[in-house]
Length: 471
Image (cartoon, rainbow, N blue to C red):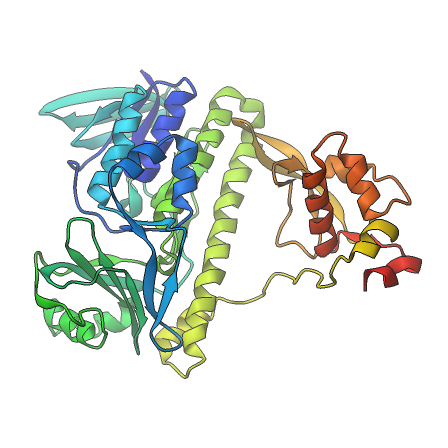
């Protein structure tokens, strides 16, 4: 009998398993493939390094010598440009090695790993999950109180996936040769977009993202010929001498979606099993790790604080829905920047998700005189609502702020809980006096930051007779 059975040892599965082991659970991790193996998602966004720091894996990843991204060649809504990142926070990784590092960390924390292993049957009853597994030529029967599915788009536990964007297909292959590209390249074409990723082992991955429905209409032509024709319309291979593919041309579904059955009292889906975002953001691995960390808190709550189960379930579903919506808006805005040039249906269709934008914050600057002299009060549009949120290792219901100037309810800012600060707002204070009053419990610098943020969001407003002080 184990506490938690995890299916899939990608970044989400290994991170989740490791975190649950740290929380004191007995965890079994099941992975179908042998590691290392190639996997898409080799370009990691700058947000990954702070997450690796959080889970204790940054040092091992940095010691592996993966490539830091200092610049990217971009040909999108204008001519060819070089985007610089002097901090070099992005990474180009060999996903086989990267995923192995995270898996070995889970193993070191006491996670039992069965790999390669195949789940033959799984069944849930009043005593939990019964899972039949074949591994190492043997059959294992495991009982688990909880099951976490991190198997990716295959979704070992099934589900209802709702597309959140246009159906998209990624065509790709790996190359060797002389003078291959040395930095990533992203490019917009007429009816596709392109991504070139130079990998640490000297190979070069070229990806073409096309509309799935349109591509299927041309089935008569071989996949290889169609891929090469599309690639020739881009500049991904410019200057690459004697380049030759080292494997077959492959196709992978790249459609963004949200799973509608992401969590139950005895199971959870994490990573791409729960949420797939548009590959344009290059944030798939980052989002996988984030869902794993949030999922571990939810699982811990479901197992150890059953009275908070409803809050935990609601928190996770809303967390995924909010993340999906944010990424959809991000991708749509970037597609729209090309669509406005008069591009075709591929771009216009993908730009259509922009929809309603969040309200703009107040634009009035906070000048020194207003900060110290003008008196403020709470906006009459502010509401306090109960919202499930993370408190330590559990999900708990906390009061949150709801206001038209916010994208959604907010509980914390900079690690400080906002509602208790505002519920008993002393009358007749200036913004500076309010920050000083809060400094008894939080640092003055943080208090000033919070006051400024609340003002710029329209949550704190000047008293009617004094609002001229803010202009």
